[in-house]
Length: 166
Image (tube, rainbow, N blue to C red):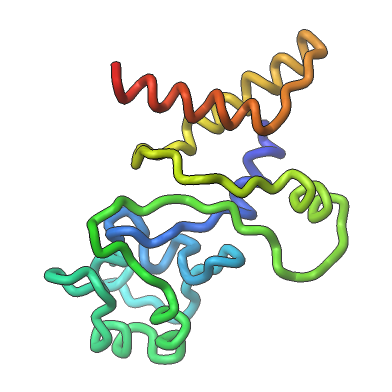
């Protein structure tokens, strides 16, 4: 489980929705291709800022003046990201490494990568997916029963939808 957690941490990034749950200086939110967090000198006043603090309150688009003040060298990169204009929650994304290195891990990730259609819910699926990965792992270890990744994901989505409607 700890090795799985390390892989998740290494390849998960935050996707900007409304910016409320993304810590500006601590979470990996700067890229949609690799987990990248802001680096640089951090002041005591700025340590608790969230992405929402550099968005305009009315339209939820980037506040250019705030970005220029905080991140003058990252301005162009940040402006490529598109926050939600409908107020959707921030989410996680699995970001495959873009180093180009050919490793067992990168091959495994490439071969098992799923392109998911919209699932019709705004619930955070991460806890459901992690739970069903855990139960699939237990089935493999204790019952020697293999579960396909697509089945694990389908079960996680179905359970999350069932929970919402309950």
